[in-house]
Length: 438
Image (cartoon, rainbow, N blue to C red):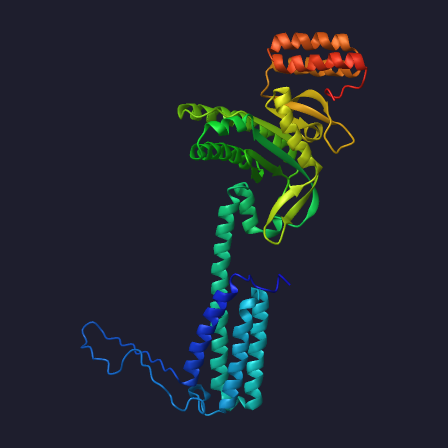
């Protein structure tokens, strides 16, 4: 039905324009209005003669109901019957989509021709020609209004989407709307959560106006990074930003792009903080959580407000992983599922975490960078780190602790390795499977 009916927003405008055009044509055809146009040409040297008649003449034909001017001697009942058909077309056309409107127009045109033929084509040829001309004018006006409306809607949609969706996806949608699916469905995607550390404390120190300006700077930076890496900004929640990859446009590289965005976001914060320092505003420390998995995506909400969003376990995990950045004191934490979807990245294992509502533990990792961008020393440290956690899972606690202590001294990451060593000592006593302190 949606493919047949026109947009409800355009119906009043189209109806007003078509009824105005119909009324004007009906008045001209009936003889109420008579428009006369006189054009005069003369050669450059020839004397010009004054026009004896005005260019446009308006007169009233008193007997137009009984004898319309376009009948050409035919029956006036045929004229008014044809006018009723055209009026029906005028009333229905605004509610229809272009293809349905063209089909209805063709049907009315055939009906007008049949009406005039049935009454005698020779006597009613003028009526038939006038009505077909009127139908053509109405259809052309309808097509013009719909075309302008579609172009305006596309422009407005592109303006709105471009703030949250990569420009290339907007261009793709403008060419083929089927490329952007908004239907409710289950789809594998990647979700990113970004949150400011210590936001509550900072917000108490700033005035509402300055706080809004400070947050806008942060949101602009985060949104730009997300869009640059092919993601879609799903929503802003206080000082948090939620972004998705793989919807509404499917992307087989959704995991890789999300991890790249998380890493780029931390680099963007360095430049943003330099600007904030110059403005004497608090610096921003951001934690990022990334998770991949099946989610329900589509347009959801109530009859008062609906929006395109995603729901599911993957969203909860991403939000939980973002909170773990404070506990581990690392900038980015991703799920093991996301790591498996990516190629060419170097990850440091952090263990496993329990997420409320799940029966299984979630493996978590920290992206260090692309393998090509990491130094030999970084690759060696990550190799030792992952080996130390593997020894811990095998129950070789003393060997694992020795490696972790060496990494703490060599890397200078006191907080992270002190946490891992403290948990390892707990596991020594319990003898349980390593589950990141849970």
